[in-house]
Image (cartoon, rainbow, N blue to C red; front, side, top):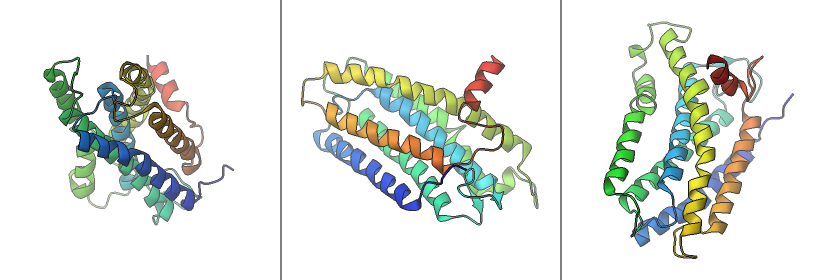
Length: 241
């Protein structure tokens, strides 16, 4: 049986992520410029973080694993401290990248190669994306009667389709895009003058290490159902294509 990620390690990883992001956010705020950061890198990682939080929040609200051994899929009945820390981690991922995204749109580099309309388009695209991801998730949590019948013991069919579409399709696609986003970020770092940006190669490498540790930790935070593994979403896309 796969060992569970201890709660103290979840707290440490959460603290590390905040620690490596806050200085970057502060430098953009004080310098009023996001020199050295690629908007594509931020945008694709924000989409991926939004998807992770959407799926995690949806499953925590709509699915309970009664009597399951820790760590469960996303939530147990009753909720455990680990469940809460998992959801907080996903929420912090989303909030930090959202703040970084907003700051990069507000304070672009002084000699930004693209017109301001490109930044407006990116902002519109993300706002539109939230209309069928995070916003319905909050509505489902705040007003459950909209999507569920009174006294319903099983997940609603429409909600199940919504979760499956995000988990097996959008989440997988945006994960791949976030991996590919390291290419434009690396190009942006190379083209920036040494020390002139808000992020250095050392800072970026440290951030990458912390994010990689977080990614590995999720292998020990979740317990996948029988017949499902980490490659299942990729097989689903290939099989349907």
